[in-house]
Length: 299
Image (cartoon, rainbow, N blue to C red):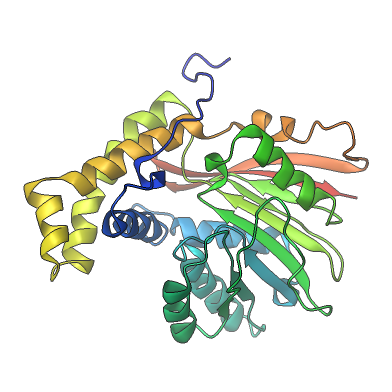
């Protein structure tokens, strides 16, 4: 074991609790979403979104043929950010857009409707979708890509193993990338699945987690300047920054290493014949933010 890491803990975040105020939960989601767009001139190598899109483009040679299914979309998460970034790049190359579909066990219809009205390449499924038993939603002429944005660490080992099993049995190949991205590269009508995380269970990431505390103040000033509740619980009683800091730290403690994630595939009835796995990384904002990716491809 790395001296600067420790065993995984399946703790609960404040944002997961039924008693967490809805405004606080939405504020937390917005802060995480805006992190995907964060870039500092002269320092950042793009953003988390641009680097994630770069991984997509490196490993998926015909992106326009995919329908990207966000399995645990919540209020939308980074999917709108990824859609804008990826399709902007494809348009500049003269290629057709990628279609994104939002799904969740507890659909956020009003938020998704607002997003889809602004972004024509984002649609949603109104009925509940269980991440462990996901049916195919892409048209027969399309390949299907499943993504899990900043949510895979929320699942215990049994559910996480079931999610991967469901994906493996439905696809010809897949790739896993960390911040954490798992995706499938496959032939027509196959499924691609991706998992994104922006946390890691190590000492350095935990020490950097207070940065999101300060980022919360910026988000409140830009997006909630006209909200007395958000201003009060950010600048007078800093409930929002503290909640996001605590949940960020807990997320670090819940995040699996690449080895632990691959071990979830060690199931007696799961055929991994002809699968190969690769690992790499992309620097976003040195030394604080790095995109780690782990890729598995079925030959």
